[in-house]
Image 1 (tube, rainbow, N blue to C red):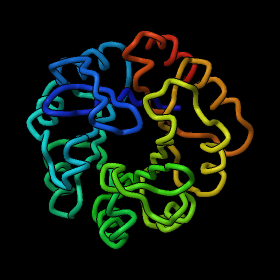
Image 2: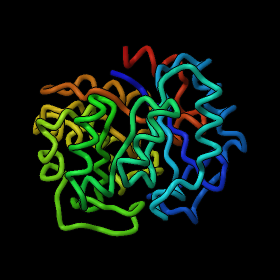
Image 3: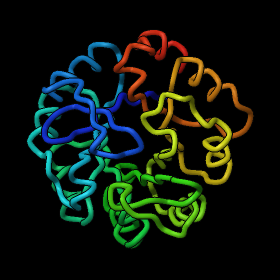
Length: 240
């Protein structure tokens, strides 16, 4: 299982928020590039970056911070938030992003996602953000009438590299993973699943790995990593 320490960007800073609400932001580092460097030094093999302002506004807002992260680390970076066109995707891949995460357009304009996956095989991920059983979009400020499996199955044979499934109801709460929900998604589609939202301890990683059925490919580490509840070395050992 691959672990993805998260860097959520708001106004150029590394923050954590509750349920995706930008008004709840707690700043953990004024230098996202410095934070990325710490994650690389801790032994993580990827960094998960989200432009929170960009997700709401539908365009890159924290581009300078993202570029600083790309310049600071040699480990691969996956980026989401406000990326809504093929031009946006191309720009970030050319800038050095290893995997681009598409959320809103995966619901509203699936052909963009499919064309992107055709042009950049395995470098496109779909973000399936779930609140009360339905997929949210526009930086989680709007809801659709689609369930997660319906959205995921659109991309079953499209060449998408991963599905990042976020439990919005638990995001930022440190109340523990909904292991069964993530497992059900892994069983439902052939695309690798990355679980996000609610991770509280290394025990969540252990439970996710131990669950019978299709393995969950990865997990995003957020607030529990920042507040010290998760020690990187212990998490990486559990995931290995």
